Structure formats: structure tokens, C-alpha cells
Length: 271
Image 1: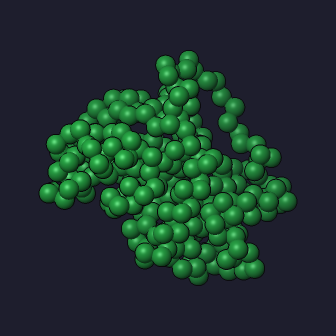
Image 2: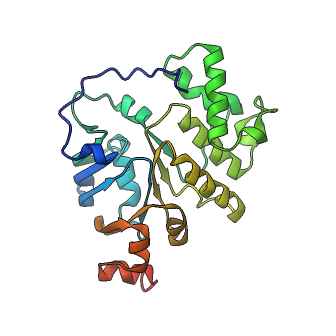
């Protein structure tokens, strides 16, 4: 994929302090849907080539937060955000930054698999490349194969790339969506409860894939499954009512939380 040159020529602003230590820095982020505030002064730092998990009860702001990390939140009518989201030392909400470029740099995989229904397996993965003006068929073919390999799907579909993406099983469809995101070489990959609609076997394959992918991409995953967070993440953030209650190494969060509210949630007293 090194051959794939993305059109991301733009002026880089002054580096944020300590940015070299972190891939993503979230600073005092507040988010609204109309007059309803969904996020309250959220701040945390995420290291490069690591997995960060966001946990918490339904409606606590997890999904809203990750949608702020690639500028999807602002696409909702009436939604707005204040604060900074810094990727590689650059505030993605700076007026000089193109939101389309942000979405290439920060990919996203959703809760339910969403292959393009009228497209083949190959075209699903190639769609983003073509949309971004890549016309070299040889290069597209190479990138599609590499993305499918990266999503641990190549061996299962290499002889039927012309079949409809929707013909795959649920777990395969989700890995196809991951391949589609990987084809654009994102620096960060957001995953919003990517296994919630899958059976245990398919879920375990996604978890294994996450462990492998973090070798070359930073992953931020929202999960309702605390056991999953404990298995695959390096750091865990516990959110409640739009606030970041506690964030730290996953082992600490689950075995020795510093906040009483975190301990109550981890122990199953509420949530």
C-alpha cells in the first residue's frame, strides 16, 4: 500500500505539546444535539498503534465521542462540537482542514455490517479508492488484495471477488467493511460496537483481527462487552452521562479502578 499516494497536501499547524507521544489527543470536547448536551469536557490521550476501548451504559456518549473523532458528528442536523481533536499534532477541526481528508485519515466501522448492497466484494473494497480519483487498475487490484488480507478475509473470498458483498455471512460482511476502511490506509480506525450483531465465533475473529491490526493502525473501539474490552484493549475509558469518569491502562481499570463509580459499573451494580 506504500505506493498509494493520498492527496493530503496541506499546511500543518504548530505541533501540540506532547503530540509526539500520542496519536490522538482529545481536549475539552463538548458535544450537543440541538440544545441537549451529550458530551461534557471530555479529555484523553491515545498512544499510536494501541487499542483504546470506550465502555459505559447505553446513552453515556461513547458513540457520540467517536463520531467526533472523524467529524461525523457535525453531519447530524443540529449537532455541534466544541474543543479540540488532535491527530498527529493537527487539530482536525481547524478551519483549514478538509473534512473529507479527515475521513480518509480516520476510518470507521459501524455496529451493523453495511456493505454496499449492489456492489461485488471487490468493488466494495475498491469504492473509496475510485471515489478518491485512483484510476490505476493494477494498483487498485493490489490494494484490494492487501486490504482483504489485512482484514483476514482474502483466503475466504479470493476465488469469488465478483460475488455480491451482501452474499457473505454477517461476520464476513463486517470484515469486508474493515477491508473497505483499510484500503484508504487510515491512521486511526474507529469501531462502533463492531461485534454486537455477530455470533461468538464471528466476534472472536474480529477480536483476533483487532489484535493484529494494531501493529500498524491506532484503534478506538466502543463496546458494550466489558470482557471484550478487557481482552483486546491497552487502555479503557469509562464514560457516564456524557463525562469521562476514568481512563487508564485496561488492567488497572478492571482490577483496581480509582473511581467508585467505575468500580460499581465494572462489578455490575449498575449499567
